[in-house]
Amino acid sequence: MIIPKANKLSTNELKELEAIASDFECSILEIQGHNRCVYAILGDEGREVMFKRIAGLSFISKVEMIESPYKLMDRRSGLADHRVQVGKTEVGKEEPFFIAGPCTIDPNNPNLYLESAHAIKEAGAHALRGGVWKPRTNPYSYQGDNQSLEIILQAREKTGLPIDIEVMDSEQLKLAFDAKVDVLQIGTRNALNYSLLKEVGKLSAGSDTTVLLKRGRHVGSPNEFIAAAEYIVAEGNPNVMLCPRGTTPHLEGYRNHPDESITPLLKNRTWAPVVVDPSHSVGHADFVLACSLAAIAYGADGLCIESHIDPSKGIGDDPKQAIRPEKLGELIQSCQAVWKSRYLP
Ligand code: PEP
Ligand code: MN
Image (cartoon, rainbow, N blue to C red; front, top):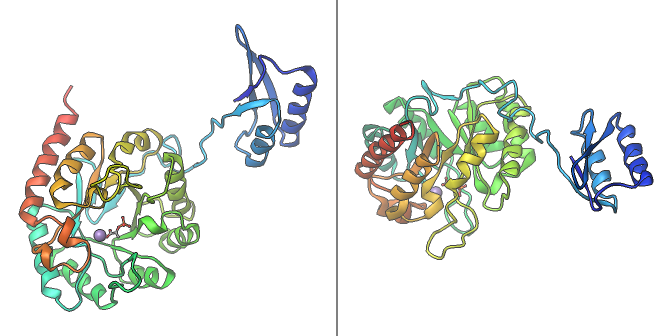
């Protein structure tokens, strides 16, 4: 849809516009309103270059693309009925889907992770998380250890729960994929690393592997977030879950700016499930419950929560933001109640 600066385009302006459209095998339709005219592009209007050329005309105020920039992620695409499954559970079908676990696995204390994993299963989680390799702001902080992959694989074997780990580069991706890690997490720092997103999609194409794509701290619009997921889907893996995890903070006191309210905007545009991470959003164990309830009220299909049997012994974010498995159990029940109330008439 094209909106001119004046009420109507002059004959010469219209000719100029038509000439651009015809270069792309499109035509222009003038729509006359009471006071002013707008113009529609007839044909395949999703051509970015045509769009930019029209937007650059001095007499045009605004050009809006009606066709979505993400063909496969669009809720009207052929994938609209695609359902994402992790292990044996379809995400967000009958109840919220819960991924939980420590931020970071301590390779020197595997039992701490294994005991947390058992308690988290008891609490009712559907999948286990645990950081093997960590994106750390401080280059001298603990960066991860390949040994932790063995620990989380052991936890999967012992609990029967599917596992989620973050991968940041090709080498980690290959190790995790070869180990049949159920959920590959792409963290906030790599949310717009298009080369990595393509690689993830290509390697996992046609497999049961699911990708949990976090919303980058600096990712702006819902469309930018969905378009990032399109990179994975376009390479052949439609098993993606979108994970808002807080953006640049505006409220002093929260680690990030909780962005669970983006959920209905995403769900209006895409079929992909939304799994909110309240732990990184608020960054404080005390606020995780409130953010979780809000996320479910906003329509989230699931949550990814940091939980640890003894947060003070954690070597990642756990001391400040992990909740104990007993609290996780209560949180899961409260979220299930909110979930049910969502469907009340
Ligand atoms: C994490 O899940 O521990 C993590 C580092 O997440 P994010 O990418 O959201 O910061
Ligand atoms: Mn963390």
